[in-house]
Image 1 (spheres, rainbow, N blue to C red):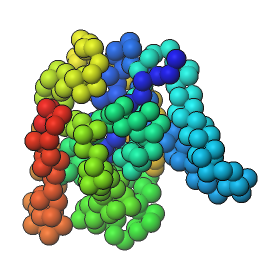
Image 2 (cartoon, helix red, strand yellow):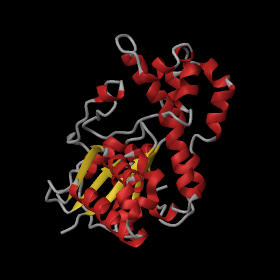
Image 3 (tube, helix red, strand yellow):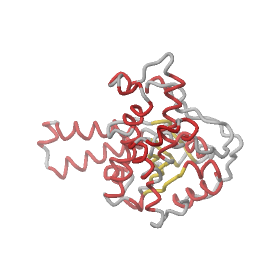
Image 4 (cartoon, rainbow, N blue to C red):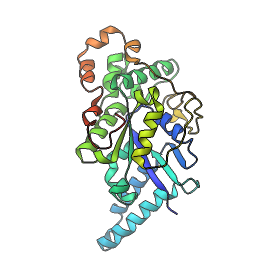
Length: 286
């Protein structure tokens, strides 16, 4: 029997790891750490299109077999678990919603949980990770532009670049809406998830149309594991065992002079950009 598959995507440093481990308390739910199946499927799709043998087939035949293969790959990535509902986490899913909708059997089955957080706190979180690692580790971004990365403003500028985590996540969310997928997205706001987790999770269950489950927000066991050295940082995907309100940290992480910089003023304008869609259907957790 095929699994029911949902996707988790969104901004970095916005609580996706916490969300997955909360959802994983439900015995019917299987959750992944950061997953590479999307990029693997995408690679097979692209290779298929470049393969002379497949290109020589009648288009209808080639497209049908390709769809079956790609769908089977996604399903097979969960064949090791007996849990009927599976969540796959990758920021890249927002870039490939057209493909994702085909893989799950149509747009009506496509549901994506999009984790978001005040952009100022996303950047502050990255800055804290950088400071905790910088004594003994050179970050990947620092390798690319060591001079720019020496200052806090330079690091902000780097992280919001379109090819870097924050800028990429921001653009992916916006573009998914531009492409007409808003009705398939459910925004999960980090601040509300930590302040009122029960209400936040209830909204997710309603969006997914799944039977409710009583979660324990005081003891969240981390069941997803990742070796964060693969990303060039330590402590990227560790969570607290108890969910509690997290006050804004950007004003404590950065000094006052940062807030007068033009780049920070630009970030303030888009710090909660997802709220512009709060009145859209199925946005009941905003």
